[in-house]
Length: 534
Image (tube, one colour):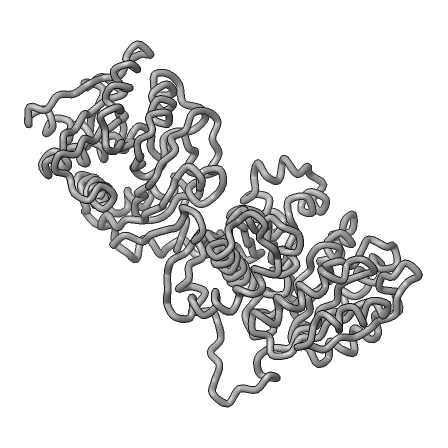
């Protein structure tokens, strides 16, 4: 599913109206009707229901006016509160205000903080609230009286349905710089906006409904390459089919090079992630001193002991054996638990330019590149780099706070600079490719913030690379399946105390769910998911 900026959405609206003759009033009517459908499902009907509709003076407010009219016609008691003088409302929104007034329905205006007591009274008797104050053009922080209204809505304890985007949220960044509506549902139109699928915006949107408002469908598919929200349908289309005559050698061979003294767990979780994600053969290569440890933990895969340093990390002269083993592999997973020992760092830096098969570089594999990211330009093999924000900061010479404040920009700039696929971990994990495609992952939950979770993801991506997916799709599908497995695990066990091993155990179920066409996405253990409204 394509994801757009506010400017891109405005251009789609313009094209629908100017080039294809779809009247703006039709788009506005369809938008309002989509919100009404969600309200009907949420409330179970409108008879004897009370709904407060807050509308601004722009087209977003016009959508809210359509909602108000249809709610009234369906039997609801509607309180319409304008955050503007009626004479300020023009265009298509003005047409809908005039219809409301001709229906002899009252209009209440909120012009100052003194009106907030009336707002509170309206909310006391409301069954639901419709937020149509600000649209996708909003930037910065809400000012009075809107700021006070938003805070009052949030404190009113009534479920809110936001029209297109919660008021106070920036559509392009997902950032919140002042009061912002916390919606139970957000009905966005035609395509999701970037701010709705990135934090903190995602947390303000609640359940996100993507509604068709009659923009010609082929317009929505333009703009390739572009940014996409990963869906179960996309992943299902990418996963390779397994013929009845397949054997283990046909299902992907992964070599995991990981671990050091005291870090055997990271290596094992990576190998388990690869195996559970469908790799037919997984070999875990570790320093010789911990081979017995990992062999005792892993009964379904091969292990290999490599030359090690006195500190129990991979020695530089293990390069030759690694290269020999790569001759029989389809993909490499490199980095978890390797340590930052100088000799091990030198090994990683020598190994990468010699690669001829796709690889995932994570954790200490990434740390080995700090100060020498130019080396990536000499790597001809497809790579997926999987930094968390702190590792991304070290790789790019920025602070973690800077990375988190502009995650999308950071991922896309790094992919372009490094010439490799970059997966930036975190809530709404981002996958950026140097070719211009960016994928945003909707699955996962806070319970996955646990040691070893990233190691599992590394193994999952390596398995998908070994099964023939290109680097960007392997990273995107891996993030989706990994997050979905975490959601399934959280549904069974809760988010507190979730372990990386719980995620591993749910990987086959996550893959089966996707292959079976079960489209539910997002946090299955809590309240968030994305709905395509038809």
